[in-house]
Length: 268
Image (cartoon, rainbow, N blue to C red; front, side, top):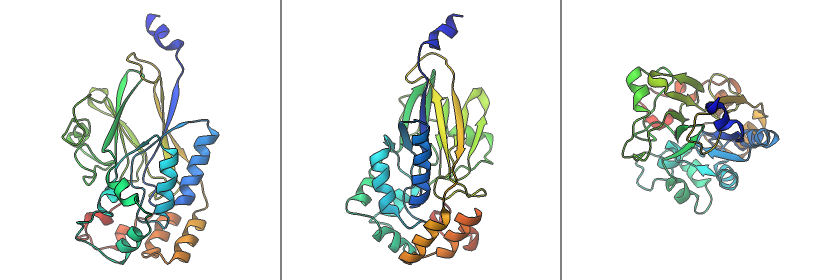
């Protein structure tokens, strides 16, 4: 009874987590409309605003307006990097699409965000606890699972998270592992794989509460007019259009069309 009374008079809060929009403004607008329809006011973005899709500039503008937290993704780091050695027609096109000051804004984004909800510390980042360029897929082993909860030079050591949410792989999942630790992936708004329908996550609980309380993670699929975004990409002359069409229509990753030895940033 005392435990129940600890949270019965406190309101639950919902936070929408979006990730990997990748320049797909049509999908982002559809997801934001769904978030608004649910009355959710807090939106956190786990990175990869740009690349792969045609409207990175517009996506960055909208996310800067709507998202209370914006985190660094791998594309946000390497695409605007003035020291980036690798280049091709597609990279040059996506970089040129950015507006004034957006490259600097993207590279200056924080690595992670910690917050407490329903007695749990939650940590969000783009790909892993060590780097936005180190990928951890759904079929990881136990050691990889545990490393996602570690404090590293990249995350800092202020708290020890019981829940970790991330993006990057475009594959949504939810897993409870050793010690009751919870790991989940938000999936991708603009470039979802397997099921190409845009997906985002909702975290619900009692905000800032040190005491145990109801807690949940929900995944939401939001249909949108992907053909409209494909038409924009074609009209603008975006490179790698065939791969983009394959991903948006069928959820078939364009990396399968590349040499396996290609640079890792071709891989989502």
